[in-house]
Amino acid sequence: MQVWHHPDPSDAVLDALRTVVEPHLGVNIVDLGLVYDVGVVGESVRVVLGVLTPHDAETTELEERVRRAIRGSLPQLKQIELSIARDRIWHPGRMSVEARWRLGL
Image 1 (tube, rainbow, N blue to C red):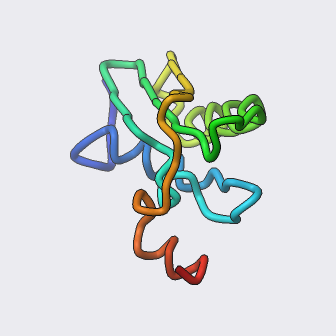
Image 2: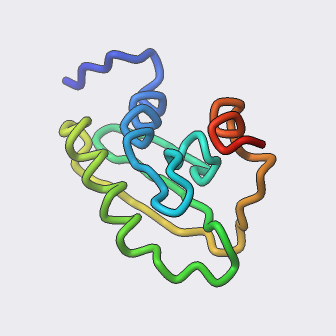
């Protein structure tokens, strides 16, 4: 039986992903707006991330940090499906108010 501290397991995944900071901007990937979708079913989680630029080739390290964050915070999730949606290019409108403030926008 899974025990969640959030009413919605997807919120728990988002909390875990807030520990993953995008190294170029110094803001976590959730507040930055790089997380496009999170879905939890049973012991499986699916995460869809966008990219900062159309030619963003440095996703391998980000993917590994996302996997580590989920495994470290939510060991009950045994299967992690992670995809990079290269057709979803980041734009400043996706950022949280906190991220905009931090970046001075």
